[in-house]
Length: 293
Figure 1: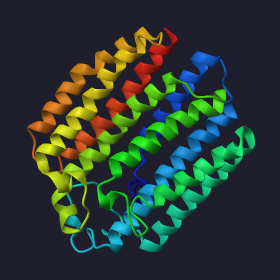
Figure 2: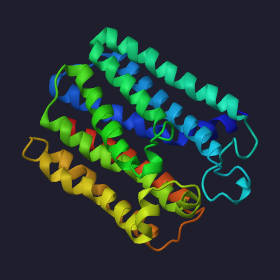
Figure 3: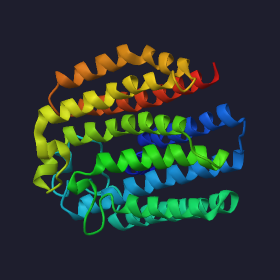
Figure 4: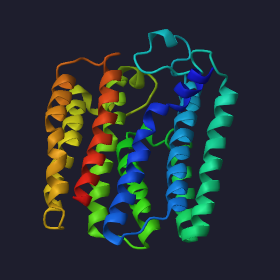
């Protein structure tokens, strides 16, 4: 049952909010020499519980819309526990709403520590997490998931991690958030590419469904390499090594993209999903390394 809940919460996605918070906090420490550990913990827990809540509610609403309800064994992607009959819809929904409540609880602690506007931002993030697949105009069903990820996992998550430590924003955190936000799009883009035929049948109009395989491959390629290109802007900002050190990941990035371009959507894409999360995480670590060298 523990493995089933881990699959339902999609714990494999948690390195994404973790590295977002870490990069924003590390940049704050390198610039302002400040590190409030309780605030860091609250920020990380907010990001993690919003991610878990979004993942769980996503499964509930996809199930309600008929996705994998009849034949989960034919699914190309990761296991969806409701459709597979492992965990009931009601329990998954309760867990998702509980995760959102916990995000708001730690957001309130963050607001007490750093100012209530941050709590309002957490509240907006929770509402947006629910609306990713819920509400009258679900973000992912309208093909807007990439914008959602760039804004919330890039700007909000990375930017907030920096702001709650320093009390201000800067061009440096804007660049960092843009790079990390673009890379955070990759796992979602791979899932959408893999599931494009299934999504089309369920009325989920992702960009892959709207524009086809060629677009999906180009989207993944651009999101993989653009953060490396943007790295050149670290030099005029005084962090030359943050521009150079991530370049060691380019061979991995080339192999990753080449593999996707030569593979048709299917279960093998689950491996590419894992590679995209790893590339994203390592890029963040190498970026941080450059901040301190």
